[in-house]
Image (cartoon, rainbow, N blue to C red):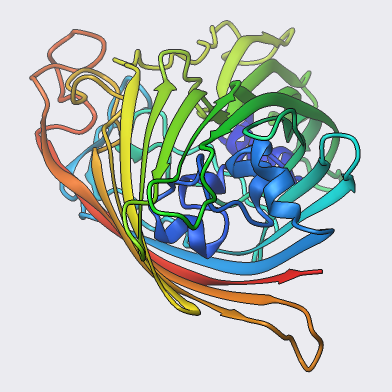
Length: 463
């Protein structure tokens, strides 16, 4: 029957590679930033400044060019969710109890960054580019579950390439300004399929897709003190505004099936849309203070507007059917109904310390990220985003040569641990239809939480 094959066609149509807006900035571009728990808006700009703060590009470029290459690994692990209702007559044709898939992919990829001085005479105009590409696979898309418990920000958010472009200039001795561009891609696909069951006939399918860039700007500024950065009492203040980015996927699909001999085929048509990845409007404000001969304090406060969050679930819209003379043809197809989400804006504090010991630098960082949901899921939906503590540490070394050349080199290592707070979800009796004939999806309840751990390394050359 065609309805039972729609899932297959949807997956096949959406497997095409999509460079969406997976934000590796959540973990940190470069090991220095990752070791500081992301507190990189105000100081220490390197080859990844195109993301951390475009206004820092004149400092990152140095005399001419800064190149960085690194890798990052983050492995998620969540508490098992077992023996709950995963299907009922609201989303299926049966009532089923079972376990939830917690097999979320690890993030493993490479980061590449460059900052180049374009013109020393024109306010030290500089350009930068920052890229992230996963190792294997190069791209991965998964809309996740609409109603079964789902850690909505962890399924595929770190599994896509990411590109950041930026320009920066020093407008005065103490003030710099930068403009960046976050590049993502949306996909539009069209699929058709004709299924036959008669001996001697054949089934066929066609999928076509187009990919279009979707960009969002970001603006940064940087203010420094009159003292040199290495002098005790020096400080800097930076801020970055990142506009929201919504990587959309749109699918139009037509399925036909001749399941009853030579009778007319049953045609089913529908459109579907998904916000595969969504990055919120973000305001990052950072402060750096050189409080001693070897110590440097970095503090940052991020504001993220999650009230406009778009669900990654694929939503079927305006389904229709057409069949003259088909047995059982007079039926209606319901469109998707996504659960409402209790969204809220969040503030993320970050604090870090850098300790310079001659050619070695030791780094420690901490951040707290609250959940973007104001309440736990108790109704039909089961989207999860537990609040978490982020602890990081790292070490860096400076060398004056690289493979015998007089090219300054930096090697940075970091380790990171993210602890998701444990929460208990309870489901009230009754299914989503309000008939009180079966339990809601997720009933009788479950416990959420988990952790992410990982690390990475970065090498930077100053040419």
